[in-house]
Length: 275
Length: 255
Ligand SMILES: Nc1ncnc2c1ncn2[C@@H]1O[C@H](COP(=O)(O)OP(=O)(O)OP(=O)(O)O)[C@@H](O)[C@H]1O
Ligand SMILES: [Mg+2]
Image (cartoon, rainbow over all chains, first blue to last red; front, side, top):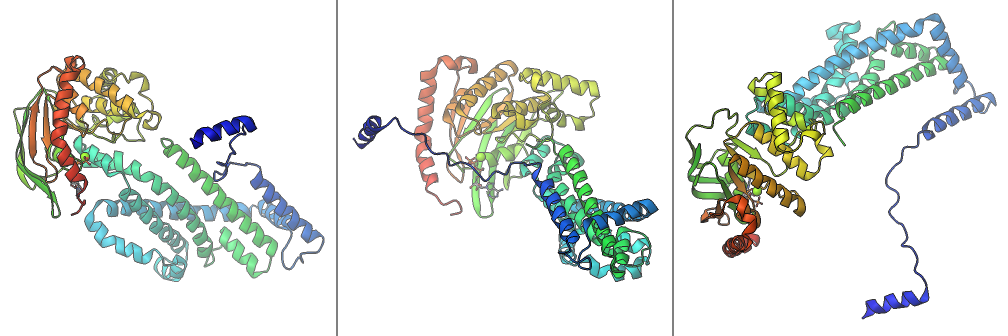
């Protein structure tokens, strides 16, 4: 009886020891302060490096100089002109691209004919960097707002299509069956079962398309734009005004963060039924 | 309203799943369908409710559904099939929304079925907040909301633990005793079958044919006190099922 023997041995020799814990790790905890701390530390080092002359001003201006450039933008009121122009292009392009993308994504997801006809086209055009098509858009839609909006629209359209029809494909077939078994109309099934069921895939697609939209915005504004964050950065770059360039980049970064935050809010609201 | 299955054949690709099923499904009683795993029970239920078209044969509906019936053939699914983004109440309302009821009328029906399934206090809960047994009760409430002529149940208790299953089985017996609904109940659990079935249909292994039909005359609400009799039925069914089940178990799925 080896089991008995072990037990009585343990009883005699010591009072036992607790089983070692080995279930830790692999579950990231939110540490709210770490992110900002790292950010501040990097900025502080950078500033110190510039002040001590470790980083020559020609290579990289100090954060304080970029801040001054930003303050100048605010003072002259140019910030709002640049930002307004950019946001307008972003909003129009992204909204149209997203709406069209969702519509086409749904038709690919729902209709065999659309899937057979459109899915290969989408697959073929999706990987093309839309920046490469910018000159084409300038020819088609003019050098003004048209080509800029079209670039963003195109750039956001394709990822949205792919995310949407992927989402539609992944809706639980049993739920659709259930809807049919209760005699729900086709439209009811699409609206009440497929649309909410695809939403968890569509919303993350928004993050990707928003990031793409910002990248394309800057690219599009480098051709024939008077105002716009991209135009501002381009001008600063060509004048080697690195402090202004950094200020522009900071604006872009804040723009991206804001958009991400908005989408996160939207996700939390629309997907609050999830665990 | 009654159902008659006449010469049902069905298959997928070159797998023959059901072969020549003839069966009458009477009103006001529960027919249990049992059989070895993979013999086509779920397929048969989908054919009965019109979710799939049989290759040959037909499912005939005789007589009119009772007045006020919104969806004569109504399913209760093994995985509950509740919309996770709708509350308990919203899930029940879903199946009423296409029928053009007014707000008050809909609310009346919802209140009624939630009360009948003892879910009234959970009406605002989302499915993720409910236990498995409660989810299935929501599915029952949703089915009752459309006043079905037939309840088609595909292993409704199989996703639940043993204790919950027992409770829900009692619920179903109560429900039948009160409402005398007609039902087709698919299960692989013979105990459930003899507890709930007025008639138990045993299918052979794939391709499924009707192997045996067993009538159990004991009234449902009296069965709890007749354990030995039910046990005798159960063990007889098990004798018949055992060899089929064993043979089915060692078959290759796509052989
Ligand atoms: N949509 C389908 N396409 C192809 N084959 C299918 C399909 N549905 C079922 N089958 C096959 O038909 C056979 C019968 O399936 P069915 O689900 O009806 O069996 P079942 O008796 O309900 O089994 P279980 O006891 O596992 O629930 C199985 O071999 C299954 O693999
Ligand atoms: Mg089954």
